[in-house]
Length: 304
Image 1 (tube, rainbow, N blue to C red):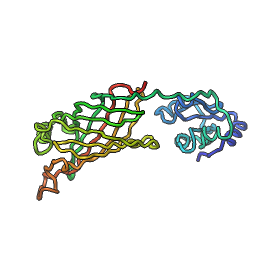
Image 2: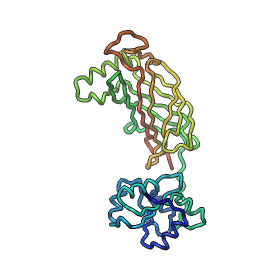
Image 3: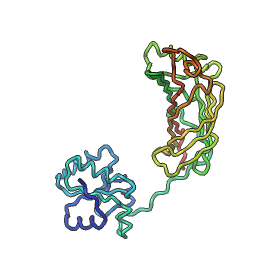
Image 4: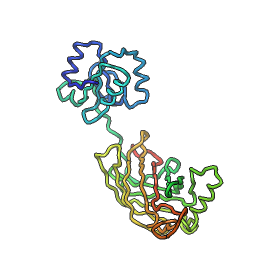
């Protein structure tokens, strides 16, 4: 097993084992802003972590110490476990990472001031209709169908760096079924979904989700960090709708949001095959829950 060490232990190892390889397993940009003396960067998040490591032609008994940002971030633990599984026998984990090192008054090399991210532009930003998508999933007892609904238009309003309002308009004439693509049954299902049994698209060609307010969870990185409160107008009926989403910025500076949520379709008057409203449906039973998987991106970068 790997050994968890302190900064003092690491300094002792460096003194008594001059062949010690010190690996900084953080992102390259974090390494560039400052790292432990004599460390080399090998980011554990990269798929080439081991291929790059193999280029060093290390003996399996070579002493290796790994470190990351700090005890609350697990990259050094993950790296140590990977090295052990690969057969390295002398792996040391500075679990406290850079935080523990600097807390002892020890210095870093190549310290640069952290770059300040560009400010987010206030105002209304249109959605990228090519990259944004809405996927639907409908189920019965043992089967399911899935596909997409076209997005006609959309925009989000940013104030003080946060999205505060917005709107996504769906084109109900652009429903597709991915699982039946190329099958004769594709058009049969789509005709059924477009009929008054389901979305009645001749009378209601659009569906509209309006974002009326938002709540931001600043301490939820990598998870659902934005709650959207609004209303969904579907089939001519409007009901309040609250969804939780993961939101952030792409490397290009575009705003991005992903969420998956479930609607009870009967609340919007879609009653076909519902066991709540019909008896003895047999093979015509359709689950009331309609799952939607939403991804939206702004058309332009919102930083600058």
